Image 1: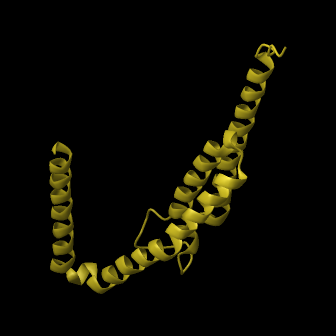
Image 2 (image 1 turned 180 degrees about the vertical axis):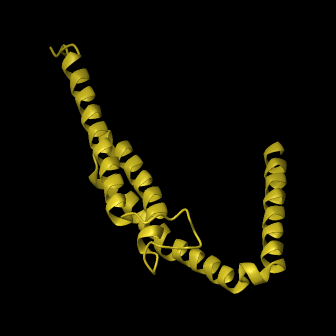
Length: 151
């Protein structure tokens, strides 16, 4: 009972924030361009439901079947971190018009594609090290175990 009341309260707060946001978009339509927001929200929902969610499900099945159990958690962490890095990094790499934006000083003229590859290489190098450490730990435990008494 307490859990459903808590969910209702949090849901009501969330709906309140959505209402405030939509009101702001509509009130300041000359700055916010509501049509582009609607297009963006619909495109994001379709991209999630038709591309992202099925792709994640397929990758999950493949990882579950092909990656050994001892390495599975590290690979899952690597995929999660890589996905987050790609979500953030691909926006700079794929943005039309190059890397120079006068109206956005946070976008510096950097080699985003190269840097994205470097970050992903660092992530997967760390994952590979974690897998090697996990496999060595397992091997040491097996070697240190007393011999079984079959007899």
